[in-house]
Structures are given as C-alpha cells and as structure tokens.
Length: 430
Image: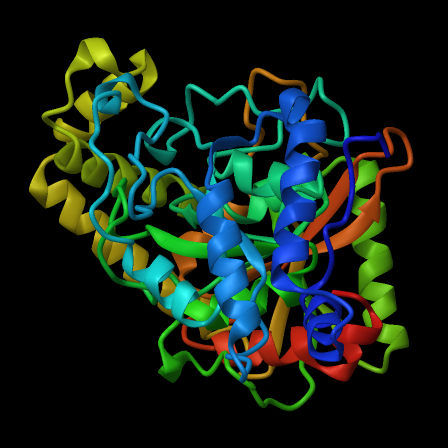
C-alpha cells in the first residue's frame, strides 16, 4: 500500500459518528477537501471540486433535526458523464469542451441529494465512457498502473481517501472493473433498472448507473439512495444465498494464478461462514455473449453518436461509431433477440437463491496506457443482473488489489443487497 491509499470511512461508521455527535458533515467534507489537496495532484481523479457548495450543504444538513437516512451528510463524487447543476458535463471529450453548465441535476443526483448525500464534485472518465482515451487518473495503489475505465475517477477517488462514495456508469465493465482494480467496492443494479435524464448515453440497452464505496456494502447503500423503491434496496430482506462459483472456458484460460487464489479464498470464507458453495459451468459461453454484446453496443453507439465531429473525438471512438453505423437494423435486431435468448438460457440454469461468484478481471490493474481487460464483467452486464464487486484480497506477487464479482439474476437486486448488508456480509466486511 502506498501513501496515496486511504479509507475515507464506511457508511455505517460515519453515520454512527454523526448520530453520536462525534462527527459533523461539515468536518467530514473538510477532511475530504484536505485529502484532495494532499494527494490528488498525483492521483488526478477530480475534474471539478465544489468546495464552497459542499460545505454549505453540509452545514445545512448538520442543522436538520432529523436524519434522512444512512447517506445523510456523507460526501459523494459524480462521474463526469452525469449532470450536476452548475457544472459542465464534458465526458473527457474535446467535442464537449464548450459545454455549458448543466441547469439541473441528473435524476440520480437529485435523488441522492434528497437522501442527504453531499455532492463534492465531479471525477474523471474515459471519453464518452468508452474505452479510450483514458483520463490522466492514476491507480492510488501504484501510480504507474491504471485505475480501470471508464469510471476511473470513481475508484481512484475512493481508494485515495478523498471521498467515501461515488457514482459512475456501466455499459460494459465500467463500474465493477475499476472497483476491482482500486480495491474498492461496487454495486451495479440490474441493467436498465435505473432510468432518468441527465446522463450522456453510450449504448442505451446497457447504460446503467452504478455505485462505488470503500466496500460493496457501502455501494449498496448508495444504490439504495437513487434506485426505485420496487428494487427493494432499502432495508432488503432475503434468506441466506447459495454461492455458485461460475466456471467458463474463457475464465479458465485468462485468469492469472495470483488472481485466482484470493477469489478461491473468498469462496472458502463464504463456506466457513456457513454458506453452501458449489461450482457450475456457465450455461452459455462467455465468448459468445461478448460478441453479441459488442454488436449491440456498436450499433447503439453508432446511432447515438453519429453526428459527433470526427476531428474532435478519439480515432477509436470515431472508427467504432462508423462500424456501428454499418450494422444494419436487421443485424442489430437479430443481436437483440440473440441476447434475450442468452439471458433466458443462462438464468434458467440457476435457482432463485443462487449468487454467482467469479474473478472481476483476469489479472490486477495493468500498466497505465490501457484500462484493462473487461472480458469477465461484460457478459454479466449483458446478462442483465445486479453485480457487486467484492474486495477479495491482494495478489501475492504484486500486492495489488484483486476483486471478485458476485451477481444475481435480473431483478434480484434486493437479494444481492440483502446479503451484502446482512450480519454475514458485515462480518466478512464485504
């Protein structure tokens, strides 16, 4: 661990300290601002810091006689593809360099403010939340390595201790993978479960707002702050799950031994906690799902961003927009049908109490210059269920964080959240 890694605090501890009077929201915001000043020159997670506005909001929340819930007074960072009133949404693109300040918060930001969260500012992203170019953000565990993409700033800001919570977006692997690379937790609700305005789109069939925290439990608290009530994330109830270690030829072929070992140890921790743990082969191959996801993503990104000026976006984004526009409507619709078939076949192979466990990525965060390999996250995003990133431990050879994915069937958000927030989840520090 380097001097750039620090824990800004867990929701349950920060809330308890505020209830007891040991901590105020204003003091917590000041602590975050001091940490930003100390480390973000090296980490470069933040693109806008709303110091005065956040302090004013914190003072107002401290003065309220009744707490709004677990997020009351806790600072949060927002990925710069999501509108925050008074700030431009630039999405790390020259094509949006002249973007005017947003006149209103994105729906998810408004809901988080209503829940008592303090918006501290905006953090970095890859261009249009796509693969490249990456922002200058560094991984706090090793400044020569990537924090992942596209929600680079979310993971890096939390891992460096500059904020306890953040929200990003996931179209491929952009929430769960950077959380794994930076040793933080994440919760991506069921694909398409989170709607609302004020978010720069990429591929609308997959675009979903996801949450980051120092733990997956904290991320579930954040998701509960902006998710619709029918997802059941507020005070969720569910029986103990069955853990299924998912096997697939792609996972077997790509997973590095130093990544596999902590994930296997996490499975054993579940078993020791009294949970049934089994293994099962994926009913649909990950490689087939990857191909279908890519066709749908390209078709939708092309149609969404067809009018972007080519000279003001990255060559990769321009080329992939052109490739997406070349996909006919018939091919696009066929891919959507194939994706629906994959979802049916895959989830038919599991029971309602099953939570699937697998590595979050083949290896730890690679050297800067790439955002890493999303091959394990993308199929789960395409399959549509909620996905949490758990901190599995550190790789023996590099000392870098290793993340694990834990996912449930589409619509089973409450089941996954209930486990994360359960006594077992708290004891295992998920």
